[in-house]
Image (cartoon, rainbow, N blue to C red; front, side, top):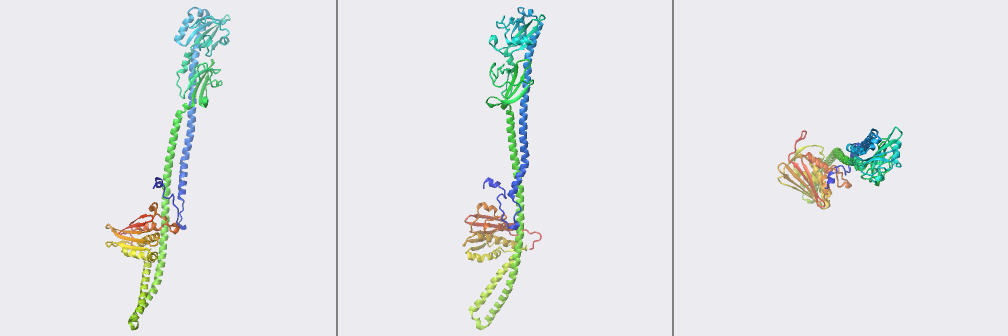
Length: 579
């Protein structure tokens, strides 16, 4: 038997073959399916709903947290960058207002100030003093820029107009990337001069290069034309054009999701840096940021699957257990009803048999008396005493009357089925009495019936009527299973000191191996199409158990079947039993 068949409940493939008055009230398979689906639905639908809601809520929360963290990172970097520029702009403004043009133009002053600035702040490449005509009158630095005319440069015009200027990163006369911070000081006579400082871009880049960011993060600065002012890890070198569009102006930090190259989802955070031409950009790959969420999602799905399996298993087990209990109770109910009907039927047949027996016994008694009188007259009268033929006819009448009397006696014996009596029983005599009903059928079908009772078999204490029904059912099933010319053998022998073993063997068609375990189940029958109800062996097994015995079956297809009944020598006496 396969593992699946072992798990299959008893009611799964059960087909009701009971008569109409006792048809079962429930479709157990349908009941099981409804119980499983409804219970599982009530348990699993809220679980799955909560899991789906939690999935989306958690996903949105993680995505929102990523946006918030990116916004915080942009704000923090922006403060560092703004402080970098504000610090250097403030120191230049201080120097321009603290020193006069002549003092700054004095030999060695700019060199000393440049050294002081690098010691205090670092990142200054050179200092230049430019007059109102755009000529660089004083210079301290590594390049030969003294006397250079800046009057036509855009930055010079811008500082003249606004008083302060922070440039983009550019190449300029020195053909090296640099940026300029310049401040203007107006003089009382209407003239002015400009103090200009070149900032080392490496120092500027150091603010961003030391950052560690999740999700393959990349922080860099662009100008308002989308030109990279600092190198980017994934988007190009300094002074290259950024492949992404320049974000629109916003007075505060903004973060949004979009798609980058190859349609990869990215998160962009940016901030326009006040009083500078710069835009701070932070770009992260969303897939990397959601890695932790994906791991949590897998754990959630595993937990959900395990929960569904556990709940489904419990629901199926409970539904199977409960429906199986209902199924067994319903079987017992139907079997009990049928047994009551069977008992009533047997009682009715018994009463009918008793009536028939009494009605037949009366004329038989008269025939027997008259035939005996005739025989006596023939014997006493000499003219008939020697007529053997005539006396033989009278003896034949008397023999037939005796045989008819034996039959009516058996009918009267079976008419007492409703009476429960514990008495000493000779099994050989009882079996001969029961098998007497099959004599004519056995003779007609050429079935050989033999009874083999061991000499040391004791009398047993039991209920005669139940034993009659037990062996009547077994003999009837054996005859039904055999073709004409079979053999029915009944053996009786002691089984230990307190039991008797009776085997009923036939040479019939046999029972399939898969059906052997069900032959004693109510309403199970292999001959339903021939009128069987499947209750004969079930009632037989019940009678055997009521008498304190046990019954087993062995069979092989095409070779026959053997039923073994083991009965106690002395039945357990219960209150109300007659002895």
